[in-house]
Length: 333
Ligand code: ATP
Image 1 (cartoon, helix red, strand yellow):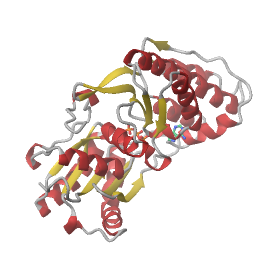
Image 2 (image 1 turned 135 degrees about the vertical axis):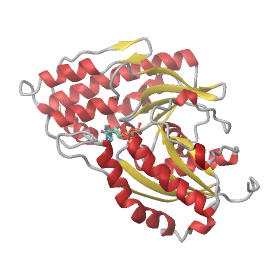
Image 3 (image 1 turned 60 degrees about the horizontal axis):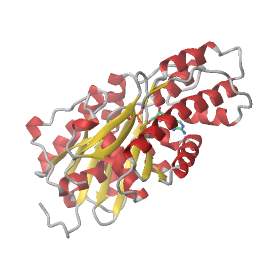
Image 4 (image 1 turned 30 degrees about the horizontal axis):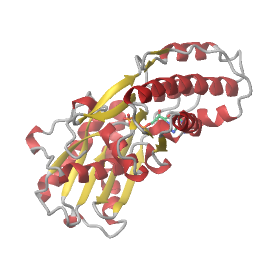
């Protein structure tokens, strides 16, 4: 391994769900390149895992080419290859892992297994400069409130059923919008003028969104779509903010970091920022550029993991579709 003072270049490969992304990160210069292509499901449908994996396989060459040449960085200079080992859709994960293993083996480079959600946290933490935040991770695959303690990210609260991203995407599909529907719901919600009563379910530090989805679907054709979208956001986000507030009080953290695809939502950012301010905590959010799935979350976390000696043998590098965040030891924090 290189001396910690020397520049390290890591290649990161992301392929957990809809996005195939490749990025090159430098330990000294940050994210150098970040290329991606996204699979879009048929209108009205969710992600079909095999179709998404086929999409990823079909774009590997062009995405790799872009990521490795954009800033003149060549594969010969790479020190380590990281990949999303999980959690995610098996066929998609296997496509990315195969590409990573092939490059690592071909160039005799260390292979670094990265937990996708930890990638979301580290890429956001890098730009936010927060050191020990309470993290609110919200996406299509996750809805949890987590904080670092005893060498691992511990879960303090989570959804009891569907994720916040699922709620928005499933409702969007119901009203004929393509997936992912979060951005379109946010736009419609801005035009909402009337609050539609929907079930607010918040238990302890957990939230539950499936009852809210069912109730919201029942209001279609009875209420204005803009009002329903506005109300879904208000109810779903309030429940999450309440759970986060309880955890913030309990953990006595002084920083709050919002990460994952739903972190792009301005209303959610605004609500969490206000709650943090009321508790004297600093608030930051993943940038728009890196809130959703991307190679950069993997390349940057690969640098951190590689510097701490994390690596895996090619033969034992099977993907883990249901990898829990609190199962991953973090030697770099
Ligand atoms: P994970 O990263 O946990 O595997 P994922 O594969 O769904 O989940 P992300 O790109 O992190 O990937 O998150 C996508 C989710 O973010 C989708 O549910 C999408 O609707 C949601 N999303 C994106 N932009 C917005 C927005 N502006 N408002 C609300 N939700 C959004």
